[in-house]
Length: 446
Image 1 (cartoon, rainbow, N blue to C red):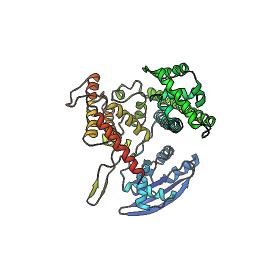
Image 2: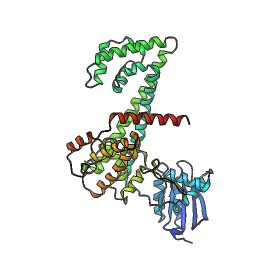
Image 3: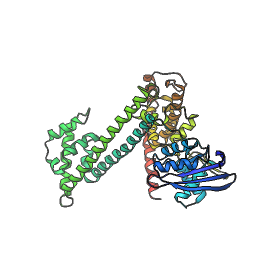
Image 4: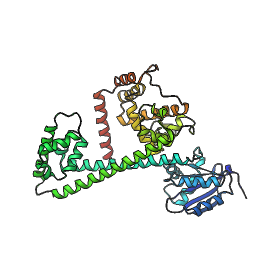
């Protein structure tokens, strides 16, 4: 017996290691419907074959799953073999849906049943299966995103150690992290650093610092700070153990940075193989050889997205809405439904683009000065605009044109000069930082 695809809904709770839980339900308007089948299949070739055979009885059906890792890809292929398709519902949306339908109850079976009802509330679209080259690029940029986070965490651990163990020493480098890491890598033991020759310390600092005239003075301050902290910690802290911990953290950082360099090279190689010089995307302000591979990995040529709003929703930079009765709060926090790597790439690109594009610079300034936004809020809003402009550039095939506030075309040099004149005043930026810090402190004490 077969059913029309529109009358049957399928929910799949995908698993990475355990079995996939599948619920097949006959949809009924205004009610929960009737469960036709409920079964589990392992995430193996045999299990996928079983899934294809079982769902072949419902031609044209659209199954719904969460994008758990990459488990959605073999499921999409299996659904295609069954003359069906797969739609993806973000984890945040599915969590809200489960809360509405099942309260605090959660199990694999409940998740599958909840997902089978996603079509009642969400507009579902068939998941697009990328070709092998596109998938390789996407996996490369996702890998790069993960190792970038690891590298940032490793750096924060080093800074955290320095802030409590020898803060004066860290400050003596004048904000130059490369010089600080190089000196600590050469002399991880405070006692050895306090006895090092100032000329040798100066050589290391000069090698990792550009355009600084007081290298000798910095070297003297570094050695003096190391000596002072040796005296302070005498009898209270094992300096040999501190040196070992410093070395370990620096090794972790070096390993993470090495992985990041390899992942960046792989992503750029895959991007160049698919898109060549990519002059179209690189014409967008803020785009470069680091951010462009991520944008192409997820947006491609943008043709699969019907409009700029859909592109913003895919990235997860559109504001969420909340309304109840006569109460409405339309401009809340962003949804964050998209891939984190894509969202971070647009955030970094926007931070650069607002220094090049006068229109984006004016928009950023207005949010900071007139609306009282902090940098993060304002830059996220710029990133949302940049997503729309990037999508328009990719889909029209026309190079991005920098324009002044009246819409007149500008050269890149003219645009940068005009954008520089629209920079946020220093006092406004200081006030925004103070407000942001106070907000974070308030949240910690609630």
